Image (cartoon, rainbow over all chains, first blue to last red):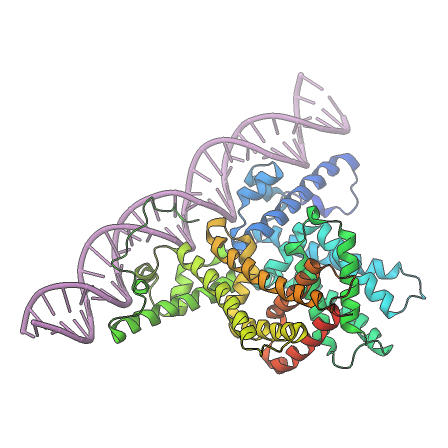
Length: 221
Length: 221
DNA sequence: GGCAGAGTTTAATCAGGGATAGATTAGTGA
DNA sequence: TCACTAATCTATCCCTGATTAAACTCTGCC
């Protein structure tokens, strides 16, 4: 669909996001906001229309700009989408790790998994545009677009791998549950929530409680 | 992307699939085979590229025909895709219902859920192109394309709703598990298998056993 | 041994949408 | 108020891909 990746990526006049901590606080704040608006808009469109169906004009409309303005912030459509995927995936892992670190050191593997379930659901459903974008598109993007995101997803999986291993080490993993299969089943159950959960259907806390109970019962002896 | 749905759907010379049971056994057998080849090809492409990314030329290539030949069998690209979604969803339900009916009448709710888990996984992973196509695209298709499929999916859900209700009626559903949430969690865990399961990673039977055990432990007291 | 219709192909049409060029406007320091 | 940069717009280019039109090739049948 893209005409052809330009041989040499155009150098934008100056990528606003390039400067780490804005010198001109206000000047770049606006730029950063627009950039974020575009990213959010792209996540929304991506989750609803899929990669190939995500048109710059739709993103632009969502973000209240004209399509060509996007090129001021991102060198190409694919770069923008790539960033949505990566940022979304990275945020997921960051959030999980933070939640685990917030736990008292005394927390055992069972508590840790319970906390992970909560962190996963809460974050997934709060940034649902990003989550759904990732869940639906991760395996149907061209490789260069998904590479970094998939690496993040793999890292996220690794965190869970450790959680399950800790559970097993504590003798709290049922013998008939293969750790890898168990982990993917749990993650599947959690990921799928983005497809059906509706805030109107009841408080998230209830879902979280049920999920924690089911996950732990499905794994423990 | 589609230019515009033709005001009046072209009437193909004669839709080969129109005749229920071929009169000319052989004559129409070839036609039916090509039609099926196109459907399978479309499912494959759809699962890999998503709705908007599914090009007729890709489908044609997969099916070993030239793109315009598709119009001999389907009035439009959308009709073809719509049929992939519907056929895939319908097959899923048919298979589940058949598996349940094959159970001896003496089978209780626990056995029935175990059988349902097996039926779901086996069928999902066997016709994985259709399953993945549905799982990834169901919620990002234009409404007219997904309507029939979503209705099938809803019917499929209803079967599970009954299974869970039976479990509850038998006192085999834990009190802290909301039936609706429990059902969606289970279906999520099962659906997600299509995203990660790899035949090279071990026999399907092992996955099925683990899944059955986890599902039942997650629901039962 | 040529017709009819099924099944397919090649060639032509045409709208949609990414990307680019070249203004144009807003904001800021001098 | 001027000059300069950031940010954004309008006009346009041009390719991709769905669809259509118009043949062409079998195959079975009279």
